[in-house]
Length: 315
Ligand code: TRP
Ligand code: CA
Ligand code: ZN
Image 1 (spheres, rainbow, N blue to C red):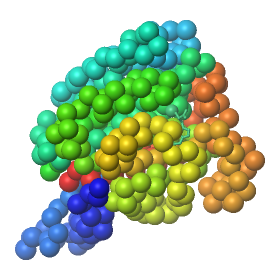
Image 2: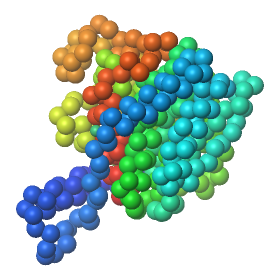
Image 3: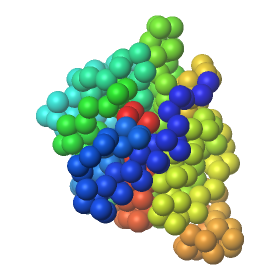
Image 4: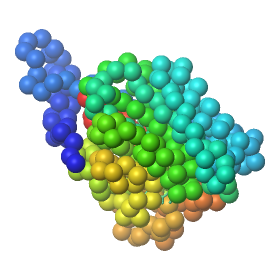
């Protein structure tokens, strides 16, 4: 399935807006392409503030935010309170896995065409070994801050926007699969895109774009080429995160990833900086995946790319 949104058309609209600003001329005929609200620059300090809260939650709950543990539910309550205060309609979806209760959090932004839904999601659970700040506080905090930016902008997108935080990804994408399996066929067919963010602040980062739906992939690539940052196709293991259940039922998917336990090559270090011969994230699934285990530049760029894709694909 392909999105009808054209990445090129969206890019053209952005160029039009830029031209208008540059010339200072807003009078006269309407631009040939419809105006697309410019995506915001997501403040990385806000993303990091959410991550500090997730770190504190882990510290106060036995050092993790894992499925079925108190730190998971506290993480979910933190995210939900922010969204409720910002005007989202939130739903907690409960499931059971390994005899423990798990939860997904779904947040709908009121308005837009509900027959064409653009979703962005991330898993909120950690492994039991540690606080899971890069995996996957990073995606969770960036999706949260993008949702809050939608609220601050009073965005009125053409398509309906939905954000999701999944439980029990670390047990095999349990929460996201539960969500997809429990959608009616009508509601399933209404999802025009699912964007996934799992590990986007790796300390020795790479810039990987999922090689799935061409329109979504191009949207991310357009953003990074605007920054002058080269990207690679995500090859570390297709289907290793919550986009897999969506992809398996034919929903167009895409996403970003800054690397896990694979080792950065010298060619990759030459174009991205960082350390060749070392993993992208040496603390993957371990106790040192703390607030110190982040590259702020990668977190910032990926959060901004996330917002750009949400704005562009929902316009
Ligand atoms: N949470 C994923 C996992 O533990 C992290 C991951 C590894 C990943 N490789 C990936 C996420 C590739 C996206 C794409 O397996
Ligand atoms: Ca930013
Ligand atoms: Zn993960």
